[in-house]
Length: 592
Image 1 (cartoon, helix red, strand yellow):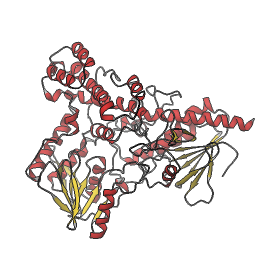
Image 2 (cartoon, rainbow, N blue to C red):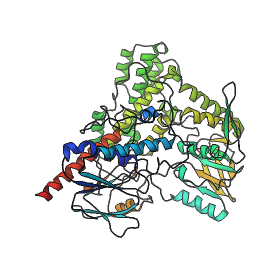
Image 3 (cartoon, one colour):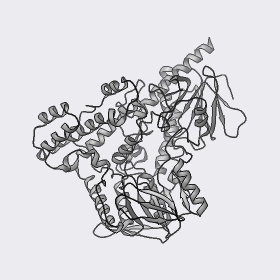
Image 4 (cartoon, rainbow, N blue to C red):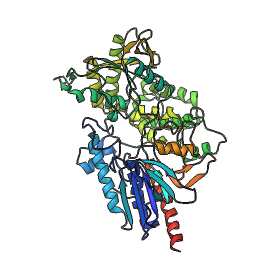
């Protein structure tokens, strides 16, 4: 399928692929003006939303970001060489209240419009075609044209460059999931492995039957929505404001636990006022340069986390002293000077002396493991405890007197932008970030409480273990020692871990077989400068790029909050400029 014109194939037409194409449109007038180029978008799902944000999904499923916090367009905060091409946020485009948590169909429509707007912004010499198929293989020599084979077609697309923006992918089971799946098949049980919840077949989860759910994050929120309101249940609000769930009778009984044993923190429900903490302060470009200069492989908890913890603590205390000085004992200038010089235990001692209330101190260990020392004699006793914790969390996240929490959120965003340069930092950080910063809207947590009071949902606790024996699944936790629950159904409420080796994506699997490098966590290794795929000798492939969660540059989502730097936008811009420069040189050589 060659036209003689330079050709760029983008595999994956979801928000990351469209974001990359938007940067092609923004940079083409400078880097590719007047030269022909064919762009092929390859994705079985419609361009824009892709699989995850497609418009054809349940209207009950929401985003977990407010509409004012979602944009696909760059602004002056993005550190990039290309031009800013401004555009509307989701709430501006859809005419929504900025604080609304839009449903995913609306986000899918916004992303479709962004794709259409990007097409209109491309120079006329750049033509785009969408192929509604899966790409199954990429071949070709390092110094020559690539062949991108599409499912069901006898001949490949020919590409001068290939860009992989594959998004979230299905994965083969790990050893534990294989054993659980085999046990379920042998004993007639139901086992739903990690998956995108909207794609899971939930019909096997029968009304009134107990179901063990492992995972307490956003996938769990989607699961409860589809199994309750999705089956005809509804909520009513009493005169005193409490939410009550009225079952349809078609719901299963859900028993949920996880490593932490608590749901993700509620989204913060107030706006920032006053001076922002000057970030980055202790974890910025200079500190990342120092880490990159060290010999050997970095250990995140040993080498990186102390700097990250200090940065987050600085954001917290800067806000506490600025907005709530009556809750401190010292002057900010004195505290800041001592904080800058201190480390580890010194910082904790400084905070204890300067901040009388422990609730006002930054304690990441307690944040990460809130149930570590909590023990209950029965699951019944634990229910009231956890309901109280969730109620307190929702209240706190909507009370500006606790605005240091919002400062820590800003610190998390700043840190994430810096960590992209370090590549694969392991799974713990991503979990910690999501727990604090990517939790559900408060209404979802209030619904969770109503489901608990209605007996549809039971909390199991922290350090959940699941075993298969005697023809059933058994779940136990450290929070309620000596107790367990049994069920004939188990749901793993989380996305598959994005490892290249276990990915069900044939294209990624073949890249790995042919020598593409992966990190110790199984992520595709890419050049942090522009996203080129690395081989196992560390050499970047001159004609293959990759971006997204399956790579070690997975730093953030494909869209972001306005004016927060957008690491994905920065990556897209660098990759698009490198691609356009390569294609321009190729076109010039061909013309000569």
